[in-house]
Length: 57
Image (cartoon, rainbow, N blue to C red; front, side):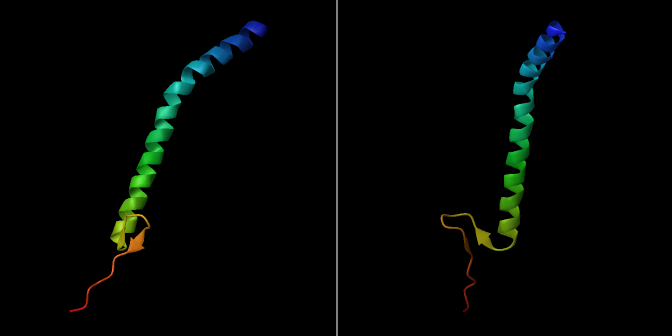
């Protein structure tokens, strides 16, 4: 029983670094998509984030 629990913990500890890359990639993709959507709606990515003003001539 104790050996089974130790084996499960070792497997989980080994798999954890492999899974973190997937979460990072998903977060980066979500951020990129959010930036793309903001640009489509006329916002610029600056500090602070503002909406572009259309010049009237």
